[in-house]
Length: 418
Ligand SMILES: [Zn+2]
Image (cartoon, rainbow, N blue to C red; front, side, top):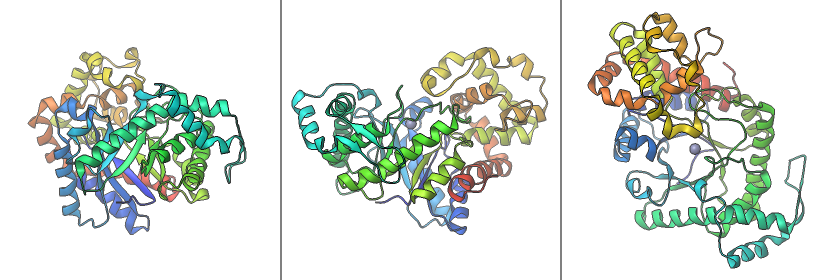
């Protein structure tokens, strides 16, 4: 099982947009770029709305069938641990092993020393091909990287072996994620993390490091784009070099857990990927559901009332809804308009507030992030919400497609800035 050079994780909270999402991949293929679609949904998302991985699998299979998609596609058990893995083993064929919580835990001294012995040859000047700056590595550096990351990589290998045993002959794709942590990894750290993965026989196809800056859900990158550019470039170069040094899977690539809509980063990423002939896996979050809300706002009338009701409830339940997403959102409660104010907004104001166009006067990143994490309210509405999704399918589909194809795929994979 193999990902294409480019692959993209698509989040679909309610499993209704599969066919539309896939139409963006079909369009990309027609234009000459193969992108592997991966439906991703984490344990957190499933538990919030009580959906199951089997439902995600069914939605993906159905979308593929309806669209006549014949290239590979996958369903990702996103951010799983040893504890949550069993929920996903049957329905998924892509597993994101989240070991961020294991960072900093200690292995035995023997394990650490064996690691240092195996990789002592990289002490001194470490020159990564095609990267301008090189790194000076001491034995103490390897020791401190081992102290920080060796246990985490061993934990990933343990989850991997568990899944392999449970899935028997059925193959799967394996990603290791260390992105949901405080500190970004340096390129040197990533190099030795990959060395440890190779030691453990972990057949990674993607690895998700943490980058500096904020990757908040549903809004653009917050940070210095030039810093990101340097980090991303160094990590791309490290992944390529480590793949050769440690005999890792030849199509190993970075996975960027984008939280969706990181429009300001795509031009830099595209340039670097071209220059290194490298691939990437871009995970988007469930912003598809925000596109559903935009579609409903554009439809107006009763559909717009649904959006207003969702926001009013979300405002009241702010603490509960934002809690599980604390590390990936930055909402200032005071910047959220009160429900009595938004009651008076007309349709155009609503559309502008929701659309991800910061140049619009009513654009509000706080409101957008809050709604991003408020899909639970829509799930509780039941058929009032889902019936509206069916009724206003065309306008919703146009928004979902534009967001994925025009705003994500075009700049990142084709180098076209919309
Ligand atoms: Zn992530």
